[in-house]
Amino acid sequence: MNSPHVDSVAGFQSTVTRHLQSRARGCLLLGLCLPGLSCANALELPTLMVQGGLIIGRSVPPARIDYAGKPLRVAADGSFLIGIGRDATGSIVVHGRFPDGSSATASVAIQQRDYAIERVAGVAEAMVNPPPEIARRIEREQAEVALARQRDDDRQDYRFGFSWPARGRISGVYGSQRILNGSPKNPHYGVDIAAANDTPILAPAGGIISFARSDLYLTGGTVLIDHGHGLSSVFVHLSRLDVGVGDRVEAGQRIGLVGATGRATGPHLHWGMNWFEIRLDPQLLVAPMP
View 1 (spheres, rainbow, N blue to C red):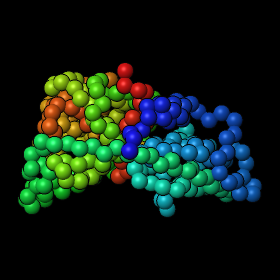
View 2 (cartoon, rainbow, N blue to C red):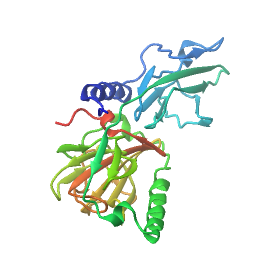
View 3 (spheres, rainbow, N blue to C red):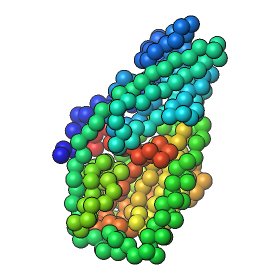
View 4 (tube, rainbow, N blue to C red):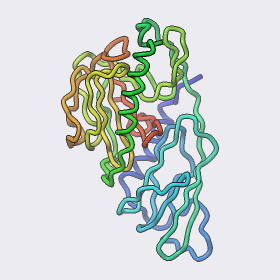
């Protein structure tokens, strides 16, 4: 199996950036307008999105946008977010209802990807197959992180785009099947950047620190930045944290240092992204590594 080609990643990144940085111009309708729906009430969505991608949709506010049976947060400019999971298939359907009583429906087809298989040896056995008491600790810690990811602010720190939090060789990619010491484990939900110990980690976009702990069993030093509308970044294996819960950070601000804490065989930064509980591919939101 092949990892996603950089041209594909860059192409999706370009699409996302256009949505993040531009306002709707004219009338772009990607869906079905019901009778009586004016052009101004149309939903604007891409026709195609790759697994692990982030959709930035638009409508003319105020509007109610529903996806998967739930209302989405809609910004003052009419934009809204939807994350596409690693294993999502088929298409998604989005419904919009407008103040004049009209409605619209749009669909987005999901493009499937081939995922790599990554074999990692030399991991401490207690990290690969932890004893029951450690497994309970891991469950508690993961629940704390999951709770922080449910934050749903009306901030739009994501709208200016994202940059790499560190530079280095990409040593792990999103979606790959991890085999640790010969044992199949969960897929890898993020991108790994090989870098020296104590390399500065910079916020890829602005936001609020919603989680910060230095001692998690699997991920060691862990920081989570909430970018608004349920979109968050997580950084793990840090040797030092320079931020705390509630801090406001701006793009390019140092949040900590690269390390090898938790389940790591060497110093690197793991950068993951989520839309609520949906794991996204950070590489789709940035230009190729410089």
